[in-house]
Length: 132
Image (cartoon, rainbow, N blue to C red):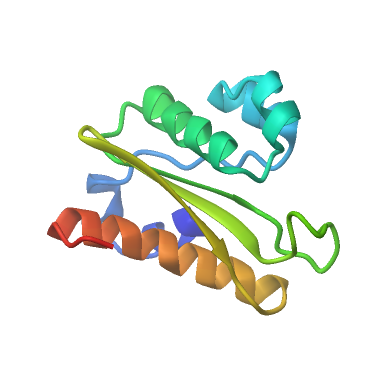
């Protein structure tokens, strides 16, 4: 959804290199280099996994800024420790790597929409030099 929203803007090919959807644990490992040990120890929806995902995105793409999300949009799949709506959003640039945890409310569509909006806003704020 993040890549879709960026590429809806004409001319986005001037600054958007690529997007990767790694829905399964295996794809996080194979495409982004997330260690199976990290996924097993911390879970696919965790700060540690998001951190490694964004590092993999930057390494794989060669981009100066990377963003990654991992979460549970529901309606099922949540647990007491990782409820539906839990999303980790990671942002990495040359001088920083930051992961934030969010607990969004709403249905699947709403959670995905707000997560993509927050991710894009974090990129915007970084580019403008605004602390989030």
